[in-house]
Length: 223
Image 1 (cartoon, rainbow, N blue to C red):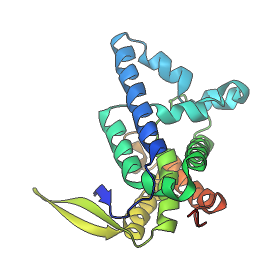
Image 2: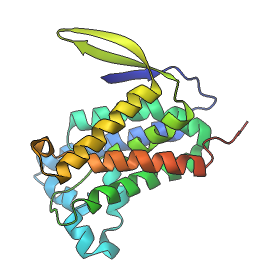
Image 3: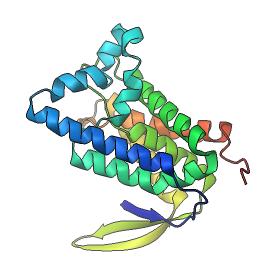
Image 4: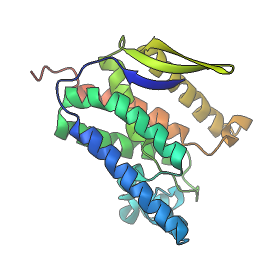
């Protein structure tokens, strides 16, 4: 299932969401340049969360909890994350306001990275991407707009169709899926071998977003 858009109007222009998308795209273009120069792996080692390095030297590596949120491993990784951010971010920004939304986003991303680190403390593999922060946005969204309709693209064999799915179903299924794969990765089942995806960052970010959103004024009346 691929979300295409939500049907909730917003009262403000989501400048922060647009800005985050622009920064992510800019840094990814920088990554492409570094890849051509053979320096991309070194860049990831310096700015992505490497659990082994964070465990050994947290004072020097804490900044990667934030910098890693703007790194991506490929076009599909970037495109999928930016699509979800574009669809769900504007409404959460509308609820929290620009400044609190930015703080919320970065905090969710950092906490999501720590959730992934907790389950892979000794791993030398860099962990990167905006997925954890965006999962936090989705965790707040499902609380605020559980019945909102998400226009979703669904493949039926060789035919693609769109349906309107309530947010609590779409996002609830997504969260259960991430949590399942996260547990499977800890158990080292065959599911854990699928692509090195940071499932605990996804599930953790979603939970942290659901907790932080109300604490930061998700349900307050800003009008």
